[in-house]
Length: 172
Image (tube, rainbow, N blue to C red; front, top):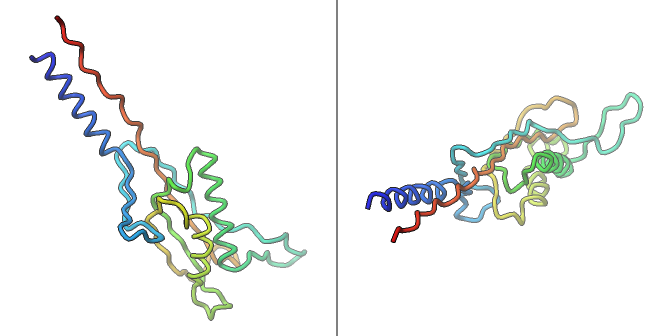
């Protein structure tokens, strides 16, 4: 009896652990962001530093680089995040947390262009099932003049599910 019971109990624990070892994006209203994301212990994580956009075109001699409007900058930054993640074996669906910093746009009276950022964001996340938890804040300035967007992200991959333990064959 003991020889059968112990493997059965171990298999049950392994199955229970496997069930909990999933990343869950909690998004009951199917919003553009997750309400919360759970990441189980043992998950592989990648932290992407705050990235800013590339200039739209090389600046003329002595001129400040131009980065475009908030939408263009969000698209540039999210493209860079996507590439960084893919280079490490992750995807945008693996992002569990995102922090978006927006500078007030002078063309919008100094307020952040949340709608423009969302247009850029939705061009990457609009059709994805897994959305990250996210915060969007307006800041006074970023590292260089003309920057309106900086985004950092954390992504996670759940630990590999352990193979189910096989109960030993019964002896006759």
